[in-house]
Image 1 (cartoon, rainbow over the protein chains, first blue to last red):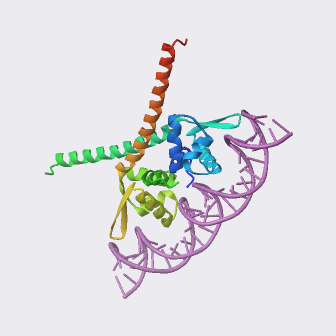
Image 2: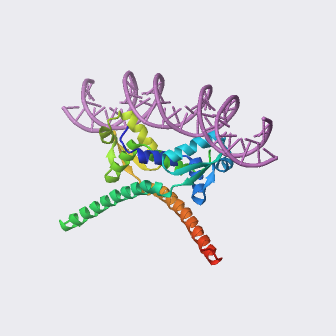
Length: 113
Length: 113
DNA sequence: ATCATGCTTAGCCATACGTCTAAGTATGAC
DNA sequence: GTCATACTTAGACGTATGGCTAAGCATGAT
């Protein structure tokens, strides 16, 4: 399904990989250059670069190059849509519980029990 | 990377598809049988079934069969780990801001500005 | 018993993903 | 200029994903 909602799909997809999540966590602590992000993962540089570009395309990190080193930094507000989606789901669910409640009330009033 | 954290990876992966998110939203409103979940998607049944099993393996929905119809229902607490991860990231980020703050304070005290 | 309904299974297909190696390019140090 | 560092690009490779069709197999209705 295409279903224009590319933001969330990109975000969730980016977060679905443990390597990418650990990179992100590391960047939440402090900006870091590519090589230093790569070493703890045990992965080759090109592989890590790919993960980084997935994160960047999702808007979760930003990078900038200074001389020959590229430094990556988290973009904390990028997680906002995820949180918003979660809240929305919760709201829908709770509205449903409320409807159920109302139904039970009504049933009582109408003489059940 | 393997990195035992299969929960979050399964969850995020399940949420990374718009069809699956819309199914989930629908189920947040009310439990629904497979055929009725399928029709609005424009996808064939087997395809939808696959999406459903992804959702189920991630623990996001539960299903039960009664006669020949299978009914799916959301498992709202399944989103908890996602929310927890988000909170954790935020905490790390904020701890960093605090450290920065502290640093600035110290710098001032030591005579800068 | 027959038939329609509702899911299931099996298998195909194209594309995307995660990983690698090998060979660039650009920059800083000597 | 030479060399090491730090990416970057290109391409290969196996697996996973998302979609399909075509047959199954129960179950409910007639």
